[in-house]
Image (cartoon, rainbow, N blue to C red; front, side, top):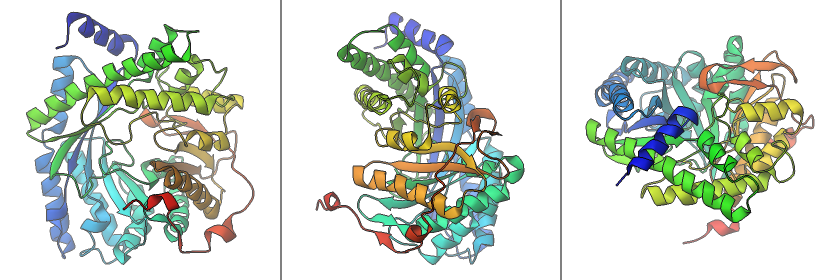
Length: 454
């Protein structure tokens, strides 16, 4: 039972420490919408989404009002569209029509994003999956709320380097297609290794084929809460530090569990998972970087940064797993540059670069996230960045991802503006040395030896 002290403590977190439920995401299976006729397929997809999710936004708002817990986003994830459109979509243009249908459905029910314009190609690509991938630039340029993801590797299968090379081209083409808005389309495109089926966070959310027909996932957040808690134990030893993070993560996750259960009951939809990731925003005091600096770093990027992030990530998971039996998604600490004011400040003062961010991704929840790079960076260099990050995920049996934004027309030192939760980002330098001959070899990097566990 929750006692009066815990109620007051939660209110304090909400009012002064930026505690929120970052998203309620409804996962919807579209497997029963598959059709060989594109028109019928689009109609079925639109109808199922708008029927299943018609009360999602209202329910979220009702819970906000009744419990006083901010729910920042209401979102939808769907079955990977490469699969759903395989019989009806003869070319990339047909997939774009399906993307527009998703966009219309998202607008009709009032969600801010819909994820699942996705392909899972960790071992190889079907013709349909390649068609969807080649449609991504136009799909993201002609929609507002559609998010896209492609899984190009896993610990069990290795890394599909043909898909990696193609995604380098597609990221660059998406940047060109949306260059009037600082290449914003790339902020809605993420390339994964070991993508989870139940992630509620965008842009990487899709509804896995192992999931129920419709489910509710919740993503909680609370960097400000953790930072405040750590400020109360400044100078204490690591045991106290770890216990503080763990207890705080427990409390944050309990809030997410409450919202998830309530939304599930009101919508008549099974509860899936709570993702207990610390997801920052551009708001002051809502920063993962500031947590690391509260631990004793002069600036993120200083020696000790990776160790501090490893500690934070592990204790968040340990605390969260005690608060809910169904923790999933990514769960840990996100380190997006544009969405975290502390990260932006570290880049500007010169303490944080892409190489250090890559090292940090070995121990954080996801990967190189919301990083703006010069618009003239080559597609092969982007492919190399994707391959490096996928290798970290494959070898370490963890989810990694790349969401880089080559901002067309901008150079190192300039700033890209994305708006809202996506924030803004200084353009960061990348290596000038080429990897083109490497990424052009083709084929697949095989799975590591420790993947063979049967």
